[in-house]
Image (cartoon, rainbow over all chains, first blue to last red; front, side, top):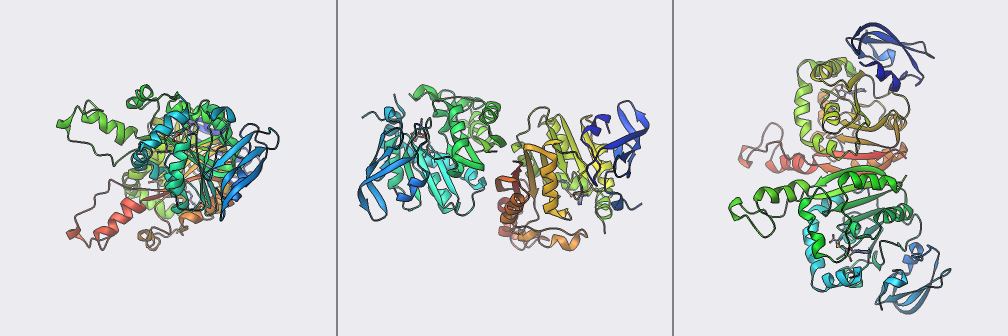
Length: 61
Length: 61
Length: 226
Length: 226
Ligand SMILES: Nc1ncnc2c1ncn2[C@@H]1O[C@H](CSCC[C@H](N)C(=O)O)[C@@H](O)[C@H]1O
Ligand SMILES: Nc1ncnc2c1ncn2[C@@H]1O[C@H](CSCC[C@H](N)C(=O)O)[C@@H](O)[C@H]1O
């Protein structure tokens, strides 16, 4: 995903802002990292360039 | 035309209300008569059941 | 020549019915998309023979359908062809709609809008007479991308406005309407002769005629009142 | 079974591409009606193989297209099929959209909306993430009037909502959306065998198959945010 996507993403639970933590980039692309809900504190993983913004209880892992 | 049409008609010039004058009816139908603009005083004829609500200067008669 | 003079002549020589027949090929698809609910009041802008107002009542379930046309001869014909108490016809001009604010739920117009002396003003008038959420289904065959239509102006004395598809969207927005959709509705019914019969009166080649009817067809722009 | 389990299996055995191929017959007509302007941000709700997001960027001129899907396997495939920096895919659920208010100009959805666990709530969410005047183009083959679709639920573990066309309009309005239009977009491309080859696996008679594809086709409901 591109960093610019952050502008329109929000926490699915309460629509509050997300904080982006990047652990791996490739050029413009964010490959690994996570979003953290600034209000809920929930974590949303970014793996292989794909952010998983399902509510945490829908991630069955 | 039906009398109920009056509910949605207005003076084309300034959108103010019209007053209906009927000279001939057939059942529910108004066949002859005229509308008079309550503000503009303009007259709009009803002939053969058809109201002519063009701005008066567009009626070339 | 005035709208009355030009189109009363059409009404007198049967061109109203001729148009109905040709326009129906695409008009029926346009009409069937309209979100008319039972009891709605609908307006047909430039009603000609009146077929659209009749269809919106019969098939569309509208409670009241009103056709407006600037040519008294057209309105007389439309009235004569109509046998439905809830379909009414009014002589009026696109430049000064004789309807109160929020009078209609939806408005349809086929091959008529571009005759408006000031089309942007007519869009503003439609904005006024339609209730919030009401739609304007504006169908035209005369438009910039349809180069086969460009010469029509030569044969019609009333000045015509030739917008492109993007211009229709821009002008709708300028008048304060949302643009809910736009597309080319193909005419799949007009018969297209085999290639060796071309050139015909209207087209140099079969490919041109295919482009005109099956691809360009009728430009539909759908506006919604905020 | 969860959305993830059901649809990751589809993604793994190639059903994402199979759907793309079949749905394209009507999806392309739906997409071409959308009033997308150059630079617009568009959402594809339940993006599967991602074809709609790609088409909205390439042909539609959108500035940014985002596909959302609840099955990580689908999103992986969609990303793999895509070679456009401005097309992005996100794993997310119809029940809790991870997008800020007014993020999108328009939203498209094909054969996905009825999987929403609470479809009215999803409409409200779309109302929130679309800007005023933004449209929701909601295309479904599974709906009440399409009786040929009724049995699909038996083969899919995720519960499906089967509204009728009037129910779609009513629910859009309940969620605060204007209904700008609704119609059945025919599939003119699926091949229909000659009458003597019926019954087939899917249809008793040719007339049934004609009804299913050429008449019922895809139900499209267009909503607009006030
Ligand atoms: N300025 C104006 N005001 C009102 N009606 C007008 C007009 N200019 C043209 N018209 C009417 O618009 C119609 C265009 S012909 C199309 C008629 C019909 N909608 C159909 O599809 O067949 C004519 O009947 C003409 O009289
Ligand atoms: N609750 C939910 N949240 C997010 N996505 C969902 C969902 N329920 C189903 N889906 C997704 O919706 C898609 C339906 S299949 C249709 C895919 C694509 N639009 C096409 O036309 O081919 C699947 O990819 C599935 O994973």
